[in-house]
Structure formats: C-alpha cells, structure tokens
Image 1 (tube, rainbow, N blue to C red):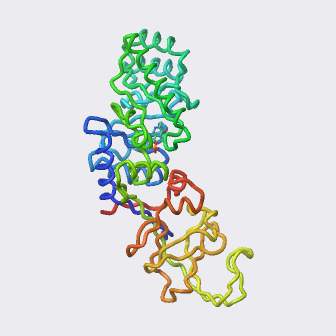
Image 2: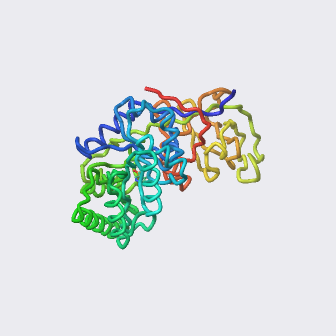
Image 3: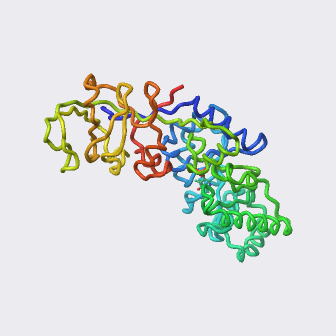
Length: 384
Ligand SMILES: *Cc1c(COP(=O)(O)O)cnc(C)c1O
C-alpha cells in the first residue's frame, strides 16, 4: 500500500524532555504522561510503548476507549487514569476490573462505580475532581457534604486515591487571578475533606503550563501533555521560562518529524494560474512540485499560500490553495528537485527546521490542535 507521508517519533528527544521535566518537578512527584488525542497526534500505539521503555509508568487518557487502546500495547505494569469519559456499565466494569483509575465529577458516576465494584467484589479507584473555577467538570463546593457521606458509607468499595482539578488557562497571564483563585478553592476543599477524615494519597492540579507558571501547584502528581512532546503550552510561557532562568536555547525538543515526497515536478509558463482558482499567477516562468499531502491529511487549508516545506535542504513556499490530498510548492529556485525527493513538512532536514510552532502560527492553529489533527492512519515509527 502506498502511503503519502510518514511520521517519525524521536526517542532521544523524548528522553531529553523527560529529563528536563523531571528537573522541574523533582524526584518524588509522579509524572503522568497525558496521551489523550491519540497522544497529541503522535499515535498512542507508537508513543506509549516507547514511553514505557524509557521508564514512564503512569498514563492519563480522556476515555475508556483510549484506555483500551493503551492497554493493548502496554507492558502491563503502568497505571492508567481516565480523566473524562467512562460511563456505560460495560466500560466501568472493565475499568474497575483492571484497576484502571478514573476521575469522578458527579454523584451518578460515583454511585454507579460503587454498585459495579460491589458486584465485582473490587474497589473502584477514584480521583475526586473539584470544580474550582473552570466551570467544566468537577464537584461543586455545595455537593461536597453528599460526596463525603457517600464515601463514608461505601468505604469497602472505594479507594479514594486522588483529589484533582484542572486550570482554566495556566498558559497565559491574562488568567492569573482566575487561576490563583482556583488554587485557593482547591486547598480549601482539600482541608475540608481532611477535617472529615478523608485524606488523599495523590493531590494533583498541574498541567504543563502550571509547572512553568505556578510551580507551587506541583504536588504528588503532575499531568503533563504538550511539554513531553517537546512543545511549550504557549509562546508566553516559553518566554517566561527563558527570562526567569536566563537562557536562550530551547530545553525542549519536538519528537515529531512529518515527511512526504515529491510526486512530480513541472514547468509553468508566465501568465498561468496555479492550483484551483486564481490565487497564484505565475509572474515569471516557474517550476513547481506536487506533494501528496492535503487538508485531508491534516495539512490545514489555511496554510494555502502560507505554509513551508523543506526539499533538498531548501525552505520552499506552499503556493496556491491546499487541496484535499495534494499541495503545490514553488521550486523555481531549486531546479534540481526530482520526483521522489524527500519533503519535510514538520521537523528538520540538513539543519533547516520547520517547527510546529511556526507552522501553527502560520495557520493560526495552536500546537495542540495541529498535532491532534494528524490523522491516525499516517504510519508512525520510532527513530533514535
Ligand atoms: C489535557 C489535560 C492535561 C494536560 O495538559 P497539557 O497542557 O497538555 O500539559 C492535564 N489535565 C487534564 C485534566 C487535561 O485534560
């Protein structure tokens, strides 16, 4: 089967990022690798076993579906924590049976979990999520009495392991007061549980941005997504870290390289239009190359006349509209380009880099979105 592009994942870059993150969170904190969104586009099946090989043993997913995918490839020794969806009886049974941990943020799930745990003669391992101000998921303060009573009444079937919350934008100073307030609410709720004889073994609040901007929130466990993949949660948090630590080189290294190849080349005479419509008029005689990657493959249409690629060590411009399955680049100044030449869409070639950062800026997409939109069917492989 012909594939039109491949994604390479660098193990040494991952080790570099882990070392950096460990230096921020300290030795005793549990590092939970967040692999929702198909491991931020890196591919759960490719990324997770590699992470286990280099010593990661705690993973956070969004759903039971992702937990299934993880379990299929895991070495079986890692802890899995579901932060979002595990609702059907069937999924909860599976989850509890395998000692997979999960967030609870409403009484309904807590009750259902206990019912199933009783039937299975197991304990459901839960993390109580608190609504501290994001207004998404989590128990509100006025529900806590009921939660505490329910936990007390069902101790034999519940292991209330963690107390957690999630910040509403720790990557930007704009949200400073809101995040600060969230921390206050969280601490108050923790004390309230404690005064009711419920203590938690794992307090966790921090995501990547919080580790940088609110290091006081690094607690028993951190849930790290974007930074482990070598990207900053925002340009702002990157700059903040650089300034504070007086550095100017990036301690993070992206894992991902996205490669395709030249499908064909051709000459275009002056006065002709290129690709659909009339966005590009050849103002001189030109040479173009086609690349078999388009918006259906995750190369955003908003990169039309904006995107870059690297061929034979040269940065080239995407010209014209990005099509569903193809794009066109301008190779007028590198006439030696041939059919079959390697094309780098994200990553490095001959010391020239296209970062997802710059790419993301061009397309007004955040790193997060661009990465997670890389289709699951692009083959991924680990490189050194
Ligand atoms: C996605 C997510 C994280 C990780 O966020 P990053 O910014 O990628 O580090 C942590 N916690 C929860 C609840 C999440 O949904």
